[in-house]
Image (cartoon, rainbow, N blue to C red; front, side, top):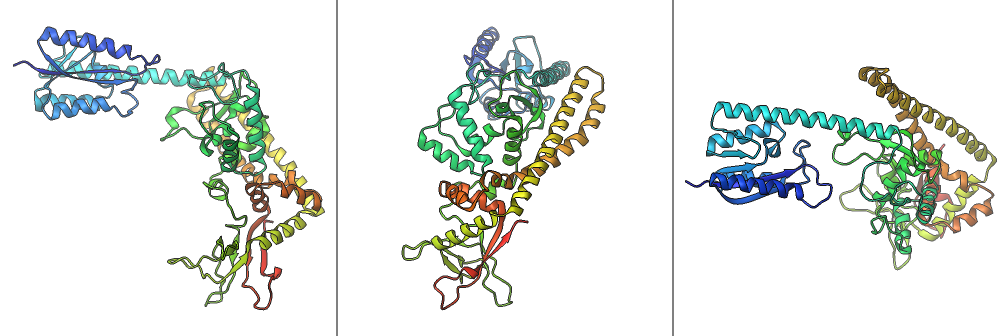
Amino acid sequence: MTRRAAIYCRISQDRGGAGLGVARQEEDCRALAARRGWEVVAVHTDNDVSAYTGAPRPAWRELLSDVTDGHVNAVVCWHVDRLTRSPRELEDVIDLADRHGLELATVSGEIDLATPTGRMIARMLGAAARHEAEHKAERQRRQRRQAAEAGRVAGGGRRPFGYEDDRITIRQDEAALVREAAGRVLAGESLASICREWQARGVVTAAGIPWKPAGLRRMLASARISGRREHTPRATWEKTRPLLGEILSDAVWPGIIGHRESDRLRAILSDPGRRTRVEGDREHSYLLTGLLRCAKPKDDGEPCGWGMVGRPRNGVPRYVCPNTPGTAACGGTATVTARTDDHIRDMVLTALDSPTLTRRLHGTEVEDRELYEEIRADEEELEELARDMGERRISRKEWMMARTPVEERLKRNRARLARSSRTAVLSEFVGGFEEMRERWEHMNTSQRRAVLTACVRAIHVRPAAPRKRWDPDRFVIDWIA
C-alpha cells in the first residue's frame, strides 16, 4: 500500500525572512519520499520558530492532528531535531507510531520507530539535539551579557526613537521630544496626556505610528536614552519583557538625558501605584475627581467617605456623591465644580507659599542626592561583580551570594526614590503666590493634579449649610505631612 506522507519542515531562525532554509528542507524531503514511493499529501512548515523554547508551533499541531485523524501514515523530515528538541515531544511521536503505524523517514539517515533499536537511536538523537540546544542557549545568554557589559549595541529590529539607524548617532529632532517628555513626566504629567498632545501635533514613533502610553513608558524607562546599557536575561521573562533591566555599563552611544534624570524616571514609571494614581486611560475632565470624599454622616455617625465624581446638573458641572446602586455611597453631598476648584487651588497655593515648605523641599533634595549616590554605588558594585565572574575571579555561586543583598538594597532605594519623586514636582512649581498662580493657569489638568496629589491626600466635603450659597468651611484638606 502506498503510504500517504506529510513533510514537516522547520527552521529556528530565518534572518533574511525569505524561507530559503525550509524550502531546501522540503526539496530534500520530497526527493526522499519519491525514492520510497510515498505520496506526499501535505507539507507542514514552521518557519522562524524554535522547538527548544516551547513557543507555539501551528504546523506541528496540524501534523499531529493529521496523523491522529488518519489522513497521513508517514512523516518525512530532514532530521529528528527538525521535529522536536524535546524528549517529551519525541515520546509523543513514538506513541503515535505505536498506535497508528506511523513510519518516519529522515533525510539524514534511517530511523525505524517500529523496532526497539530504531526507537533507541531516535531517543539518542533527540537527547543530543536537546543538549546542543541547551548548550547553544547558554552560549547566547553569555554573549548577550558580555555585549551588555561592554556597552555594545544590541541586536536588530527597528531603530530606537531618538537615534539614527546606526543606533549610536542622536537624531536631534526626536531627542528634543525625548527631553520634552522626560521633563513633563518629571513635572507630574501623565503619559496619556503627553500622548494625546503628541498625537494632535503629529508626533509618531520610529515605526511611524501614533504614540501610546505603554510605548512611551517603555521608551522613557529605558536606560538607553541616558547612554547606559541594561540587560534582562530572557530566562527571567514571564510573558513580556520586564520594564526595567539591570544596568551593566555605560554604552558606546551618547545619552539624550542625564543619569540622574533617567534614574528618577525609571523609579517613577516602575512605581506600581502610578497606573491607578495617575495614568488613567482618559484625561480627567474634573480636576478633583478621586480627591474629594463625601463627609456626610451616616446613620451610625461615621462619614460616608465615598469618592465624589463629576456629574453636571442642568448644564452646570458639579461634584456629587454618586449614590450608585449596589454601593455604600449616600448620594447626599454635592458642590459646584468651578468654585470648588478655585477654592482648593487657592488653599493649596497658600499652603505652598510658606518658608517652612521651602526648607522642607530643600531638605528633600539633599536626601534625594544622597539616595541617588547610593543607587549609583550599588549599580557600580553589580558591574564589578559581573566583571569578576566574567574573568573567573569568583564562581557563579559566589556571584549570586554577593549580588543578592546589593539587589535588595537597590530595590528598597529605588522604591524610596519613586516615593520622593511624587513631591519632586513641587520643587519646580513652588514660588511666590502670584508666580504659582500664573504657572497654574498655564498647566493642563494632568499637571495640576500632579501638584495636588503631591501635597493633598484627600479633601473631605461636608454637607452644605442650608442658608449659605457658598460655604468654604465645608472643605477639610488631609495634607500629606
